[in-house]
Length: 168
Image 1 (tube, helix red, strand yellow):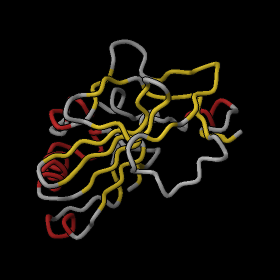
Image 2 (cartoon, helix red, strand yellow; image 1 turned 60 degrees about the vertical axis):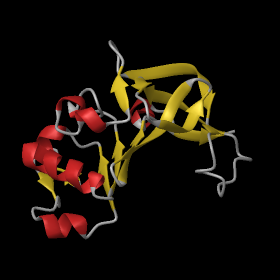
Image 3 (cartoon, rainbow, N blue to C red; image 1 turned 90 degrees about the vertical axis):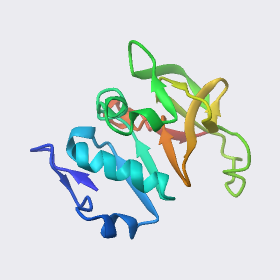
C-alpha cells in the first residue's frame, strides 16, 4: 500500500470487506491514519479481531506523527508513544536481540544493529519479539483471533546518511 507524496490518499487499500479479508497479512509502511480514514481504520480493527495480521512500520508517519494512537486502532495497538521525541538517535549501535522463538530461523552471526528507533511504551498483553536491551524494537499483540505487529526500528537513518539496520 502506498501513499502518494502529492496527497494523503492511500493507493491500493481494499475498499470492500471481501477484498480485505482475502489478505492473510496487511503491511502499512509509513502510512498515516488519515490516509486510511475512519472507515479503513475500523475495517482494519475488525479484520485483526477476526484473525488477520496487521504489520505497521513507522518513520515519518509512524505511531505519533501518523496519529495512529488517535485512530480506531489506537486502543488495540501493542505500544503507546512516549511523551516527547518519537524518533530517537543512538550514538552507539543498538544490537538487535531476538526474544522468544519468533526469529529462530535467522542467522544472528552478523550481529545486526540499528541506531534509530521510535520510543514507545509496551502495553500489556503485548510481547517483545526483538529488542536492544530494554528497548523494544518489534512488538506483537494478540487482538481477538488476529495480531498486530509494530516495528519500532526506524529506517530514517537512510535520510541522514546512515544504514538503517547494519551488521558488524
